[in-house]
Length: 182
Image (cartoon, rainbow, N blue to C red):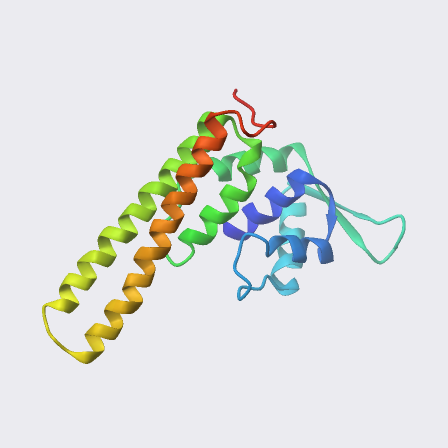
């Protein structure tokens, strides 16, 4: 789901070749996560076989294939955007992709997505505080160090909550001129 949504969301903006896609697909992630061509090209072939994209030869470079989203691909994009985000190792990555692509959604859906992300961050804070309480129950040096690392999670989640509140305010006070309200 994650890579498919990421590719389709980028193609919602404009047709792209594999090289350009590889660069833009990394935008939602931190600089340590790399999206390899070994992931991109097989995915493009699967999306083409499913009718979600077309691959055509570039006029300027015959060796370069350009991916363009189809109506079926747009429909699949909206289906993926509507799916609940699974809990797991890639939860935050999927939120980042959806947040990066949500300009294609109505304002109410954008606000719902931000609220879901807010609930996720609040859950992270609750779990982290529970973990710290568990560690504090036994006075050990390694527990103190672990608690410091967990405190970082709390600080990051709190910063994300502030960002979400600011984003919601910008969307609802018409500070963003291109927001669709339907």
